[in-house]
Image (tube, rainbow, N blue to C red; front, side):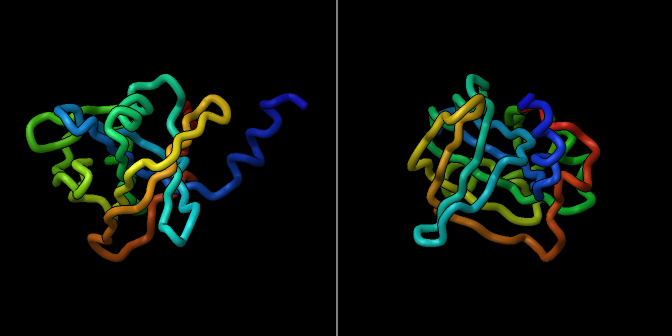
Length: 159
């Protein structure tokens, strides 16, 4: 079967649209739009995040061993659009969005609906993406609201 024939059904699965962040623990902190994130265990609380293999974002997660998923709110499409290409910290913001350093050192966006911070415990490369499985070390909600999903944004994921 032609791989492109899977695109329609796979796109119909429910995906959130997030801003993932990471740090190497030194000087580099970056963020990017991500949609392949999911909880994969209750005990312990684990989250999986996929990043295209060989990219700066995958290497940054590997180097620092941490990542955060900033849960964005429905209606924040324009804010997330700033992260369609990975961006690094300048001053006290990331792509013009103020943040605080989380427990792992990852940027936690002030304007996000909520966040989940993880320490990587396993890494798998089952295909063209690296799957980072992280144990949740901190999380929180900044306010109530409806999370942003891929169905809210007419964009094709390019990895």
